[in-house]
Length: 245
Image 1 (cartoon, rainbow, N blue to C red):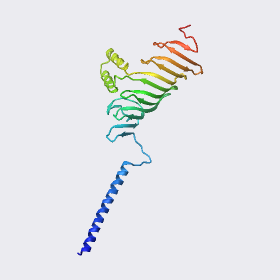
Image 2 (cartoon, rainbow, N blue to C red):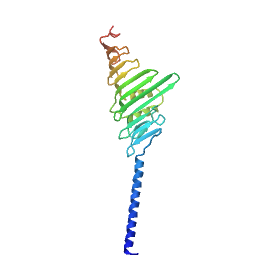
Image 3 (tube, one colour):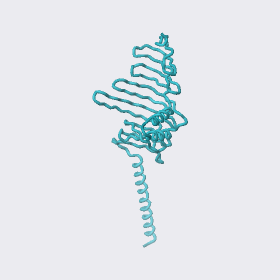
Image 4 (cartoon, helix red, strand yellow):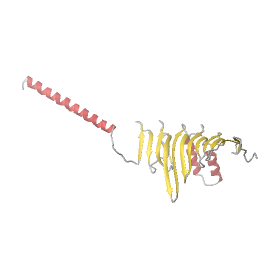
């Protein structure tokens, strides 16, 4: 074999090697591209989990049957929600709010609901939009809750599970009532009540209504001031209460 021929063979071998490597790189790139960005015209699923690159759950879209319980820092606590919806999670893998909706119909009765909630850090929901409908008795509006700082939601759930394992009786009832007193209170409601009144209610830290602005179903406005027992002490524009007559 002549020197020129040997050189030509080496050139062809190098060309074949480079071409093979280039095709391999292109093939791997195309595979990774198709794997990372798959396109569907339509998809039918029962549940979708969105996770960070480290596997931390960040979002769940689920039907009713596969809806998760309460997930706190990646640990799931049993909790029957009874609806389909969408759940948000923060970077710690803790539920941070969500959207739920549903309706049930039995004989001539029905119930329907929908809500958008956002949770306080380490606690339950602190602000939300909610709609409830029971056979035409409808409530819809904005809620603001005051949640405790000293009782994280995971400790509260553990305590609740322990109380539920207690035998029925006064001790169990008192323990559950004491725990529920630590869950916080509704401080504000602004919306529509079942009697078709547009209402704003402001409550004290224990959840007791103290100021109520109302435009009733007939269009009549009033402002009610209430004491800690829920009794109206003053009503504007000067309508006398039963206690004042």
